[in-house]
Length: 238
Image (tube, rainbow, N blue to C red):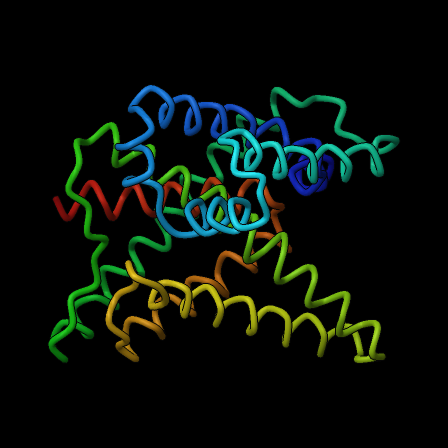
């Protein structure tokens, strides 16, 4: 059991778990066609591609290559202690991701009525077909976790440690900062939602939840839980 608990947090397990999700998402976007794919990409998937275009590297495969390369380099760094049973680990991660996604969805069902009594609807607004919706939610799970947990949380933690903050303070500040950025990002830009403090609070709490999963259970499970939660919400409100 302890070996499994450690295995899920290894970057090689995260890479093997992420690879089919990343392939399904990118192949699905390619199959839908460039015009529809550009319309369906949202959140971090769209932001990352916009930034790459600004820097002159807008090829469709650059974004997934960056995410895969980060995990591969991290795996190479930790190659000596990689899991010895990746298949069982993969299935365990899939089960955990579903369980954690359902747990957050259950929380949202209780949080939602309270917020709706204040005149706010918590929902993901999507209009394309079911298959396209699922692809969109998978992409959000991958790229938002890569940006906010693997990027902002880890990067923020190391910066805070460099300025001599204690470990616990660095973890807490980095977690809160990444969660706040995750919540705020949904209200920024031409496709951003109107700012509402209750929606912001829920998303910040969800960001902290995904950060906890990232730290305690690994990047792959954080991605799976995020994508699974988005799919549960999207499938139940339409």
